[in-house]
Length: 480
Image 1 (cartoon, one colour):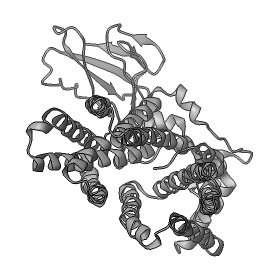
Image 2: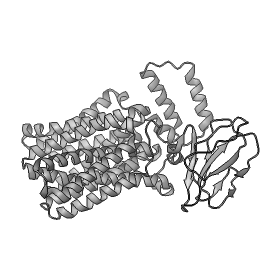
Image 3: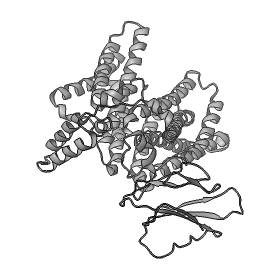
């Protein structure tokens, strides 16, 4: 992963233009690096090229996910990871063949020039994301994008397309102007800010703790190629593990498992390295390296799914920036010849244990559509069976009339009913035995919403089961 300085520009440029601009500038800076006349020029050009490569990675990563349906997002993301791992496997071979770093730099720049040439010949290969166009109210561009997709996919929309355009016009209006958001909008959304912070923390741990495992590999075998290829193979196995497990057990569950295994491996190596056999140390190091890379990959993928479209580029840039800080910590340890390694190991092992508690606060995004607006980012991950559950206040019941009742009772408010809007009443039932839920009285047709169960801090207090019942009455509140 590269520095993330170019990511904020993706707010207004869009996915395609941001990608092409990043590719063009990174090609230019890469060519200048080959002709560097001094150390200062070399470092400056490498820094600028790394910043532009960050734009290439972020824009392409986001565009791939936004063009996919929910079941295919994981596989599309992992295909990109497999390509990255393949490039790392081929890099030592290119280095041996080129023998001189300017030639290697030129070889690494050629694929970027090939991308620019392919866009010049086949512009349809790099489509703009219709999701981003709709989220930012760019309706004419969105209509054009829909028509291009329909044409390339041989989908004939002679009857349906005019209806779609009419519905878009009625929804957005003819005088709709583009609206853009900044990543600073996270300050006003506590849920998304929390998710972004937790995923940044886990990616920071996943990249920073890898040095603790690779150092043990150096102790086992000092050969550079042994350590390098073992790390890359561990990354490939991490990709396979994510492909096989995440769609079955969920994003949060596998992220939690990766954090637990990474933390346990790190703690065992920290406390028992001198007492364990060399083979067992090697196994624990490879296991920790595998799951730490899975933690890093899944954190970036998870961040892309839970952040809304209007600020997805900036949020992913923040998360990747935290990962770069972890990589910088590992590089700093190598420059200092492992001075302070024990403190580095203790800190990251402690962080790995702490991340297990933080991951429990994340939502689950498996098979859910990507959020588009800031409001969707707050609400869509709480949707179950078409309903959105919110908690506007603690220890207060709020009905849809806006009145608060029953101090000491957990809050429950609901919106976005799929059924036709009808007046309803809120019923609460108190059960002294939390193992069974009392049945609702028989009678009128009812639509039950998800149950919110809460136990107060007082151990002797009963378990409270809250229900919403949709009936043809005025909004009233009853406590049984």
